[in-house]
Length: 281
Image 1: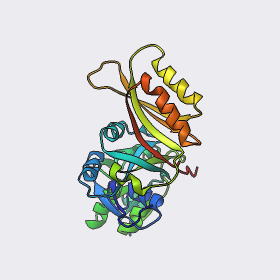
Image 2: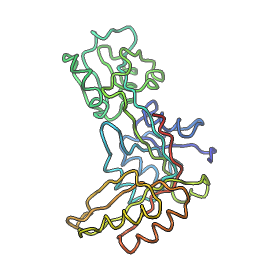
Image 3: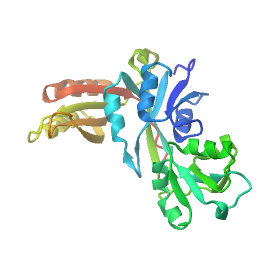
Image 4: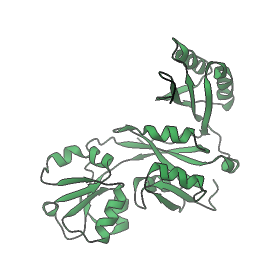
């Protein structure tokens, strides 16, 4: 891994789960480049303001982040890795307060959704959706907002000097997010780790058995399908892009499989070949 310029675009600010995922993957000090939205993240990468990007793609509770698939397919970025992060949500506030002092809690809507059972027990607390978990924590800390809380990672509490009033308030304790690590295709020569997983996209016509044929070919070449996600092809009613993840033992398996399915699909995109991430579950 090239560690000379570890500038990493993330959705959110320092202290966010994206920031934590970047630190976990690179295992070296990184300089996060905050982005308010995922679309901003792709713009930062297009302008080469960051060398890498770390982007959430799916969560075991909230599901798949569908727009990220489309932006990835139409960009010049390639997937070079993945990392899985256990999501532990914490209620935090300016020090010197108790839970009963909190009137309002701010966080990203997904974080709020993941903690609904906890706040059902505290109906007097008003929940306010914001653009980012860590940004909410930073705002409360900067303005010393007493009576306000944020839902965020422990990393944010430590970074912004907040006190955790209630740790681990997520409803589902088996809450994990998968993050993809991206870089521009011009940077791929710096990454030589042997791949055993790939993400590809293609579309098939709305014809009986067309998708089944492709999946049968992939299985016949020893590729293990670990995810399949469909997105509509704009302007072509009832046709869909298929985004699939495949595991394999040798790259030759994948190469042969893709050669064989090519006559059966349209617009085949190899979004990346990379080592499988450790799920640590």
